[in-house]
Image 1: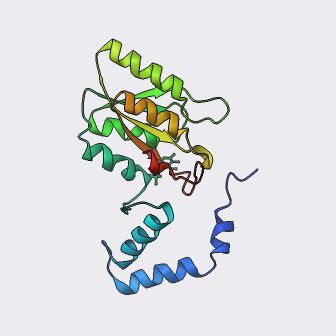
Image 2: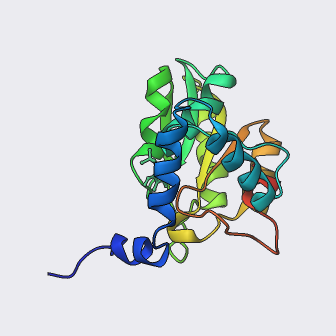
Length: 181
Ligand SMILES: Cc1ncc(COP(=O)(O)O)c(C=O)c1O
């Protein structure tokens, strides 16, 4: 059997640091919004050159939070790539909205901006749903085509989320996805 991923390789590379950090959190006992969370947020914002970074429970919640903030709801369409981890689309019906699957670029496997534009037009013509947002995914660490995707979003006044769960640290000409999303 060929193992899909060797998580122990990374753990061994960080030898001792993870155990020490977990022990420190246990001893500190500040389980919610403790100093580790604040440090993480500050470090992540600096890493991504972002104004703000917010810690949350997992990658799925990170997608849900902006959808909640923007009041995405029943009758809304959120455009997602047809090839991604399930969470990208799974969060959309949490709020009664519908994921609209957009085909991916056969070379990068990331959402195809031209197909995105066509899907938005089709949803508008159909008239059943209101286009509200796009979730682009940086699959396997490769950034989506944000300049082209952002142009399509701006044309249709859509919000843009970058699902960088697989792409932390990926850049386009030195710019992190949050430059566009
Ligand atoms: C592209 C993508 N989005 C979202 C998620 C969800 O992250 P989590 O499992 O932490 O909820 C994952 C997890 O693998 C992912 O690969």
